[in-house]
Structure formats: C-alpha cells, structure tokens
Image (cartoon, rainbow, N blue to C red):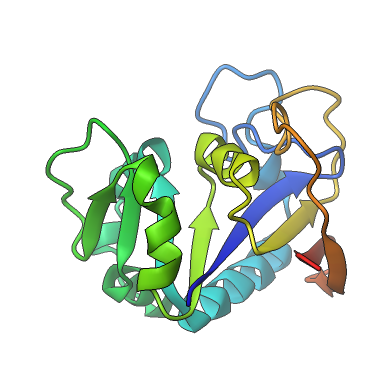
Length: 187
C-alpha cells in the first residue's frame, strides 16, 4: 500500500508561488535568494527523499517544468534517480509523455494509485493537484521545506482547501543554516 507524501518548498507565510522566478509574480524567485550552502543542503534532502521513494506523482504543469528544465537528460545521482522512478502525471491533455517511466493518470485513478504502489509516492510542486489530494483526503504525510522569508502575498499551499486537515508534527529539523524541514503525518 502506497503512502502519498506532499513535499513542498514554502515561505514562512505559506506561499508556494513561483519559487524560482518564472512568472510576473511580484515576489518571484524567492527560493533563489538562498545561499549556496543552504541550496546544497536542500538538494541533499530532496535527493535522499527520491532515493526512498517508490514513485513520483505530479500535475501536468509540474511535469512540463521538469521536462523543460532538462531533468530527463541531466546527469548525477539525483537526476538518475528521478529518471528511473515511475512517474504518474495527473492530466487530461498530456498524450505522449517524453520522460521515461511516465504514466498519465486521471484524477479518478488517484485512489487506486495508493493500492498499486508499494511505498512512498512523493508529490513535488503541483499546487492544484495537492489541493485536490487534500480535498479528497489522500495526503498521508506533508513535508514542508520552510524558507526564511515572508512575502505577504502570493498563492498559498492551502488556498482553497476545504475542510479540516488533521496532521501531527513528527519531525522538525534545520537544513543548512536557514531552512527548516517540518514533517507532519495524519494521526
């Protein structure tokens, strides 16, 4: 039985919008302001998360970002691991995925995905998909990499989520010198 884990970069005030600066958002690129050592520590944590994962789950826009950023052809341990992992993309308009080991699923197939995958199913980015997962109660664990910035505006991780999301803090640690990794699980 799979466990869906949402892994997100967020600001202190919960903003997830445009962390690397690809839009006209007033605060775009907030993640890029991290010092090099913090970014290296962050990358090490995400690489280890990918090593432990059994599959990736993402929305179409996040999938297209990974492909557009060259991840299918990148080299290195993290890129190699992402390439070999089964990737499930929730989309209605993606017909021929180009990144190897990618399967397109519809939102109706999300519940069966947990039954079909044995292990952690990690979700990167994918804000719309994450809100859907919260709404249909499919999030088993939430990992927040909290960046030391308050933006005051921008799309938040929980914007539009309906209902309660009971979670229990199970781990909190510092990553690098400035980041905090908070892990919550369903009780």
